[in-house]
Image (cartoon, rainbow over all chains, first blue to last red):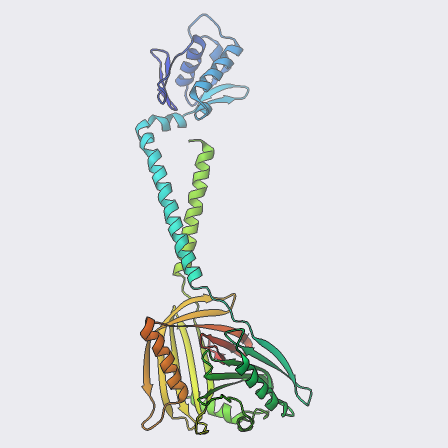
Length: 266
Length: 172
C-alpha cells in the first residue's frame, strides 16, 4: 500500500520511506490506527472504532489515537501529512487521491524532470518572444520631430498668422530662419489673408524649401503646399517678386484650387 | 511538490503563455490602412533666374502592411511631366505619436509626355531615393502627423529624413 513516498507493509507492520530507505516498525497503536484507516480509505473512521482495539481486548485511549495520528503524519512528512485528514467531531480519514498519485511511482520519477524541462522550454520561448518583441519595438521606435520655433505674425488688419518652422537639427538653421523672415515680410504687406498657419521646413541638404499654408474659408479647410528649389548660391527661396507672383494675400487661391482639382481628376 | 509550489508554477506558465500570445499578436499585427493625398506647387529658382512651374501630386497608400507612394508631376496645362512610383511596406505605426515608418524597396520611374522636361524636384527625388536603394536596397522614410482634422479630412504631415512638411487630404 503506497502512502505518499512511503510504502505500508500491513503483513509486517512496517512503514518504509522509499526516498530515504528508513523502515519504521509500527508500534501497536500506530499499526492499529493505520490498518483501520487503510481498510476504510476514503471514508471517515470514527474515533470510537479507532479506540476499539480491532479484535484486541486492549482499548486505546483517545490520547493514544491522537498521538498515533501525530506520529504517522510526522513520518509521512510535510508533503504527505495531509493524507490523513481530521474530520472534526467525527474521526479521521485517509485520503485517496494522493495515495493514487503516489502509486504511479514510476511516472512520478520521470514526470519531475519532464515538468522541469517543460518549464525551462516555456521560459526559453518566452525570453525569445520577449527579445523579438523588444527588438521589433526598439528597432523601429519613432521619435517625433518638434518645431524649431513658433512665431505669431500680426498683419496690419490685426489678423494673426502662426509661423511654425521645422528643422532636423537645432543648429545651423540660419537659412531657414532668414527665409521665414522674408516670408513674414511678404505676409505683413497683406491687409488680410485666408491663411491662419504657415509651416516652413528646409530639406536636410538645404536644397528645397517647403511651405504649407493652412486656413479656413467659409468653414472649408484650405491647404496650399509650395516646394521651392534653388540652384543658386547664395540661396534665395523667398523673394518679394516671387511672393507677389504667388499672390499669398488673396482671399482666394482660385487658380491653385482649380488647377489642383483638374489634376486630381486626371 | 507542495500545492503552493504547483500554484506558483501554474501561474508562471500562464504568465509566460499570455506573454507569448501578446508578443505573437504584436509581431503579427498589421498596421492600419490609410491613404494620404497631397498636392504641391513646384517652383525652381534656376541660375538663369527663370522659374519653371509644375504641380506635384503625392499619394501615399497603406493597405495590409504594404505601402505605395506615387509622385506624379504635371505642368501647368495638366500634362504629365513624369511619375515616380515606389512600393514597400509599413514598418511600424505609432498611433500615440501619430507617426508611421515606411520602407521603400522598389521604384519605377516613368517619363512624361515627349519633349517634356522633367521637373527639378523629380530629378532630385529620383537621385536621393536611388542613392538609398542602390546602397542598402531600401529607402526608409517616416511620416509624422503635425496637425489633423478628421472632420475636414486634412492633415499636415512631416516627411523624414527629407524634412518635408506637407498638407494632405485624408482619404477614407
